[in-house]
Image (tube, rainbow, N blue to C red):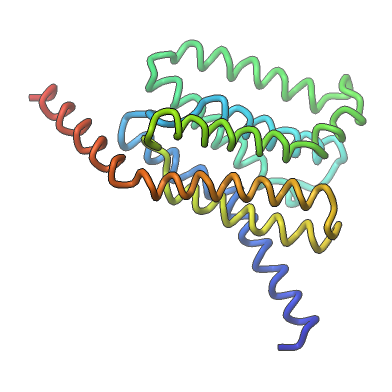
Length: 222
């Protein structure tokens, strides 16, 4: 219960939560979409906003010449979310459009990380990327509410994102105190909590819909 030691333990624990929320969270979602063969319930706008937010962080770290060990998890997460975006387009019958969009996105990232883009612009985008995260989660929550279900949204991924949001709040408190940045992280965490609550609220309905979809696919196969 030594206070300085306790702070170190909490800091390391929250660091792990942030890492889990960034790196591991997209994997269960990708697997669920792939396994079910459906992207029903996933908001493409939310996915692209998340992709843009994490890309600004990766671009900022690259332009500042940070070692890959300091931002490699962002690069890994960026690739996963890009794959998820392509899967969503593929299972909606828009594969070609998805490939074009990702190609344009790769060009945008190259431009963002190149000397052609002023460092001040990259810095500003990095500083305000939490707003992109908040907007993405609001879009996903609104989509869930409008559809009355969460479709193939992975409960495990949503839970990991929520844990990562809690870790971001603790980290921001340690670095900046009760700043605007900390308050935005709190809002992002609340948005994650809303989506998690929706997943739990619509759980039985989603299970019923998944069973119906499986029965339809079985009949088609027969």
